[in-house]
Length: 334
Image 1 (tube, one colour):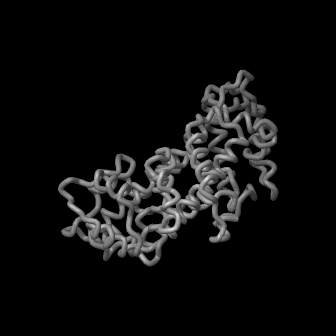
Image 2 (tube, helix red, strand yellow):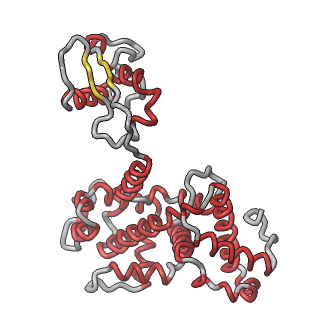
Image 3 (cartoon, one colour):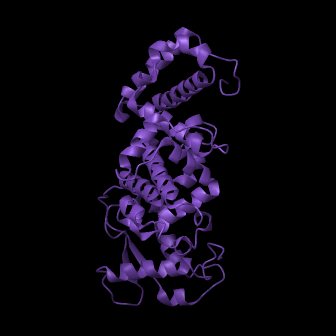
């Protein structure tokens, strides 16, 4: 309601209570928060964000009532979240007029090479060279370049300077060819820091919520295309690690009929993939969360084989081949 109407506001006592509640909720550990409390926390974070956003828009009206709740008093996690939202607004600002926050710029300067002197004006100039399409090409370059597997510093060092041919290095990224070296470097560092800020605030929000259920979650989702692949894989691995478990039950045995698999049918029922699916799907939610190195043992019908790892790897290879072939109508091939 507050988001839809600019005239609805909270009185001083209500804001006082809300800000205190926000601080108390951030003081709670994850183990202390129930699902109901988590929903309350999300709502309080969203409402507080709206109030602070209005403070920027109507500063002369609200500032007098909020003097005792200046930003430094809020929890660091919430401050990082607000900084992240401001960065997102600046990235998406088509006018290129918004200024980056001092707090963000200080961190940006800290990761810059001391011999690479830049000013606020340099950052704003770099900003003008990039729109959403150029940003995505730079993100793609950062994802694809092998030096990123070593470190971000290695990637920065690999960027061509003015004496190197830009056209060769950026042949797959045409929007970057005519951008001066120093501004590509600045933008790459900026995008890297954006990823760092999002990474440290991601645990503050509940991304299981649907679009429209949380203002701040929707903000972060708007820039998911700006997330580096290594950051996404880090979250995926963390999620898999948190949901895995060691089972006390025996590893299931899967029987494969290779003769049947060689007889191709239109529905893919004979494939190795489907044979495994039929035998594993009822308990797949447990099997594929197991910490065990092998999720099942393999027995090939009419063959005397003991699965010491080889048949297991062969079965995975066969199933991957099925997925990529026309024998299994699971996907539409490109």
